[in-house]
Image 1 (cartoon, one colour):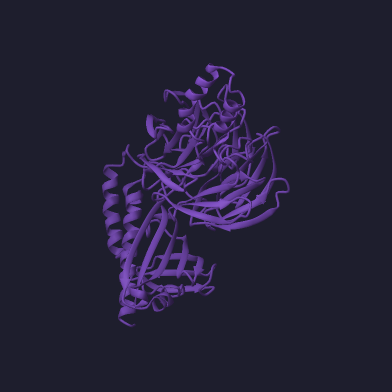
Image 2: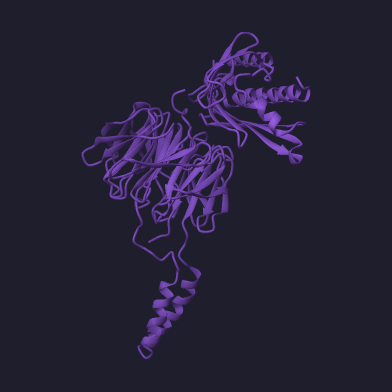
Amino acid sequence: MKMKLLAAAGAAVALAVVTLSGADAHGPTRQKVSEKIEINAAPEKVWAVVSNFQDGSWIPVVDKTEGTGGNAPGAKRTLTLKGGATVDEEVAKLDPEKMTLMYRIDKVDVKVLPVTNYSSWLVVSPLDGGKKSEVEWRGAFYRGYPNNDPPPELNDEAAIKAVSGLYKAGLDGLKKKIEGGS
Amino acid sequence: MIADRPASGRDDGCGTRDTAPSHQWGEGQRPPSTSLRNRLTSHPASSWRGLWGALLLLPFLAAFPARPDEAFVTSQPAEMLSIVDLDTRKVVATLSIPGKPAGIAVSPDGRRAFVTSPDGRALTILDAAARTVTARVDVGGGPVGVAVLPSGEVAYVADWYGARVVAVEAASGRILGTVETGLSPSGLAVTPDGALLLSADRDSDAVSVIDTASLKRVGEIKVGSRPFGVTIDAAGARAYTANVASNDVSVIDIATRQLIATVTVGERPYAVALAQGRAFVTNQYAGTLSVFDLDTLEPIGTVAVGEYPEGIAASSDGAFVYVANWETNTLSVVDARTLKLVDDIVVADGPRAFGAFIRAPSR
């Protein structure tokens, strides 16, 4: 998925050379993204996977997870993506009662994910009286380019597209992992 | 990862009122009619004129009971202004405001509201009572914070990209002039006497002092790292900046233009409100308010609110503080005495309410 995103970004860069004037560009505004998926498993089972910050393998683009601090606020992990890029992340809040994990990206190249000041929430809720679950993945972030008149590959739309794509693929991966029993 | 990006404005800033003002007729809303009745019964023969005058007044008194406080909440992704009745805690009106609205200032007389749209590069001027747009002013750059003179006649807009403040005539929407600031001016506040405008210049780690009469920058005060919101107390004595990157609040003595103290708060503070002799500071990353005493500057406690709390302001009687939670889409109601979260009012997506967003009853 990431590869596809990057390819799209590459095409956008090529275009940008021609059309960089963009008088209509937007100023930086924090963006929001939310994606949800239904999983045929009890919330506790889903939360066990979601709250395990030291294993990001359910996100398809992730090749390797290395971290410290376990699953608690302040815990850190480095995700190595297929293709070699890395993302450094940190747990901000972990609330088992509300089945909510909040974490932030401490460091990522905008060429990998075109965002800054990224934080996100993973929330597990019961469906069908606890027989099934819903997982919501929400994100808050700014686009990759901090000033007025961003190049297209670093504008608000590019940031939203990249994060939405990541969440959709990630939640699909989570569903497969849990429902497939692996 | 320093400081929330330009952000399109959020902070609270401006003239949040300190403690309870003297007018007390929010409670029963009866005083005028009661006193009228007394007059009528105790002076039965006084004069027909008096009686007629009183009778003529009655329908007006009935038609205009004391107005409750209202919150004017900008919702950035929703491109909406939500007006919340703070007695019933219900959204009573919504207005579409294009350009990702962020900053807000309601004039002290409650007549007008001013909304910045960073993405639309505009200031929208509203008739606060009629809930209608009266002007949309192209101010250019990236308008973020906004503050208004006590007279309500002039609004000042911080241009994040242009490192300047634009002065706009409220009635006409005419641009009166501009003044240079430090880098990335964000929050603005005007002193209660209207003489000075303070601008939190985020990327200069400083506050600009601007003389409103001459529209000249007359001073600069170095504060903590990345100040965003700035709030002036009711006496015009001190100003408080929320410093996003140093996780503290700078306390400024306005008369001497000195930094007099620094108070540690939570992660990524955004803006400050004052009530009950206390400062209430929104901590974006912590999802909390830090509360400290204004005399001793000692911490009093923290209050858990929603995610990404941003704009914050006190009720006109100082009993409550209201907090716009950008991520959670709520306006939290916090009792300023007990520090309890007493209610959460759902508002449109992405509330910021960066500025003096409470419309108080007119005096």
